[in-house]
Image (cartoon, rainbow, N blue to C red; front, side, top):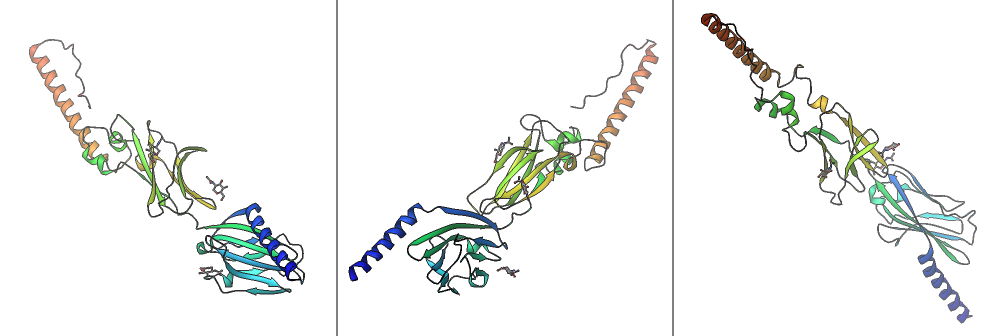
Length: 287
Ligand SMILES: *[C@@H]1O[C@H](CO)[C@@H](O)[C@H](O)[C@H]1NC(C)=O
Ligand SMILES: *[C@@H]1O[C@H](CO)[C@@H](O)[C@H](O)[C@H]1NC(C)=O
Ligand SMILES: *[C@@H]1O[C@H](CO)[C@@H](O)[C@H](O)[C@H]1NC(C)=O
């Protein structure tokens, strides 16, 4: 009798160890506040069947719930979990309601009657991503100090290299990536394992355009999008009123005045010298 008991125990341990190696782990991603149901796969729990639910952030070593002799017990053994747990009387499946990021980890159902089987779940809880912020990398003030260039040139930076740039940033978090899209095409993407940094990604465009770009922050359970266009941040139409309007108006006025004075001077000279003018007055270069 004693020997057969030992045999059963050894068999159980071997089965448990074997099960641990061969059972698949089901991966589940959920958003904070969601409910997640962890199925045992058991059709009907009878008096002989005992099901233990174990949880741990890295190892499932804390007993959080069990059903034994058809009676359910939920334990206050892990921070904030007890009030969120619900166990199905018929199947022993576990529901975690209003889940938080501190309940990410490994959940294991240990199902015991004649032999022991396991159901394993790796649950990752993600907070929704934050809305990305976009801005033109060339601040508008550059327009005001650049006098000899056309306003739009100043807004879009000097020639050579990239002619225009924008920056998108968003708070980092587990599984967060930041991308620039033009339509459905992804232009660039970044992510960082360092969760303390803010993610930022430049958009560099060779040619000025009026296209609309989208910056998307995404994680496995959510995404948020901010649109961006250079036209809005840095208008191409120099006649429209923006910060460079005044400077440009002054330059135009000065150039017009110079041209006017030069024309009058040339005409006056031509009339005095009695020659017919053959030269057309040239506009000063804008360069
Ligand atoms: C969900 O959990 C959060 C944080 O633990 C709590 O503040 C909130 O009231 C809960 N919501 C519901 C509907 O229980
Ligand atoms: C993509 O982003 C990196 C920085 O994360 C930048 O160095 C690179 O120039 C970008 N590529 C394009 C095509 O914008
Ligand atoms: C963003 O989320 C929506 C569902 O909310 C999904 O249809 C879409 O494919 C996601 N986009 C990206 C870029 O992940």
